[in-house]
Image (spheres, helix red, strand yellow):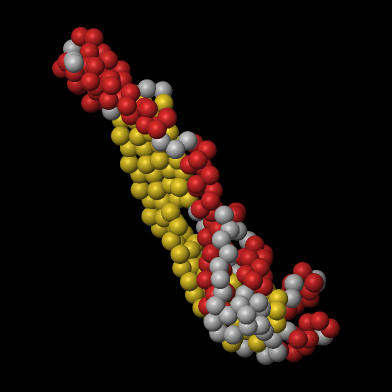
Amino acid sequence: MKIGHLAILALFAVACMLSGCAPTSSERANARADEVMYKPINYLNVNQKGPTLVVLPGRIKSNNATFAQRITSNNIADFGEMELANANFGVLERSDLGPLLDEINLGVSMGDPDALKKFRRGKFKSTKWFVKFDILKAEQVAKASSGFDASAISSIVGSIVGGRDGNIISAAGGSLKTGDTAGVWIIGLRYKVMDASTSEQVTSGYFEEKMEVGAKSTSIMGVSSSEARTLTLDTMVQRLVQQAVSDLDKKK
């Protein structure tokens, strides 16, 4: 068999692998979606009732614009309420505080127990803790990319082979292009627990996670394949909150 025929058969085999033999686009997309779906965790002391608490909106200290567009302090507090409730803490909805929420936040920040007395009535009288989740770090710390364009190589080989076979190699090989990009984020979350009567810090903890975002693509003879690999920022934050709540659950 001539070299041109061998080359074109090899290229067709690659095209077949991209289009038919590999998992379908739907299968790959669903596999990626499964990776970012909510995954509940089993808290160690879930059978033990935890103290009654209120989750206050924390602070996002990163100035990364991409992160700020996707995540707010209220998002993080919502995750915190849900996970603390799953861990069997007595969670009082901060939405029920209404306008008092800003005053409580200010009182806690200033360490002023007198400012907290006005809120400790009714169903909030039993509150033992205030909990905050703060994002201390959210930065893309590394980025890399690579690619391959076979047009130059195929032209050289096509010239050497010459004739019809050379033209086949040049045309088919020249259509092969690949690309791969990846970026790595590091996100750090701190939780703090304050006594609801004195605003003194009871305990705290800090957790970091690494998140990779990227894409991979291949194109040959009109057949293309592309795939993004990423965990979303809100998924990463939620998993960090789960780690924080798991740590707090152990301290009941």
